Image (cartoon, rainbow, N blue to C red; front, side, top):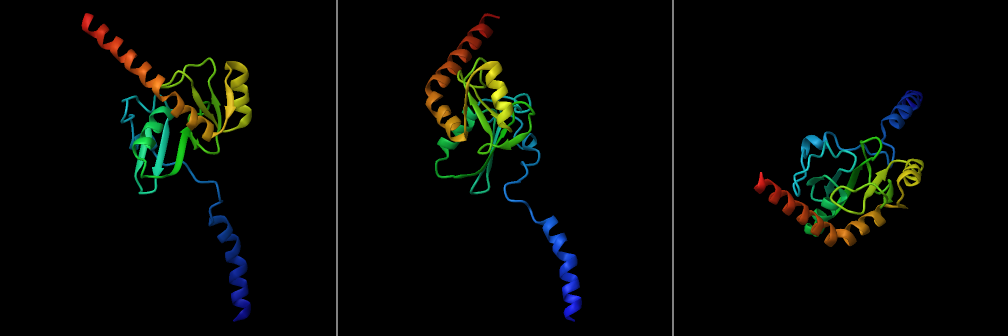
Length: 175
């Protein structure tokens, strides 16, 4: 009996190791763009802006898909009683979702941001972020710094968006 139990344990242990998820290796949410094809705040197409999109899972099980960190920050502020459990962001280079807190962020630079004057881009590797900084400028940061920058820029960005929309409406009236 003891030999059979020991034999079973020896066979099952490697299988258990294979099937046990690795800490920190959480997959990105399946079909986030299918769940939220457009940003509920601004209407932008999240597939078109796959390099800047954000997907949030809250502690109550609800989710939110945004086009950018700007719109994600608005949602997190408006839903102050819901705590984000997981935040994914589009990798600027590869377009797939990566963990926002593990990403290497670049704030600012010559490239115009999505819904913001001061861009906030996420990269899976530090090397990719550093290469972007060499080519387009900006400063390396972490998620905390990028989120803080999004909130600091909120007033000016919202004002910029209002002005752009006003100009667009005026242009449409003339047509």
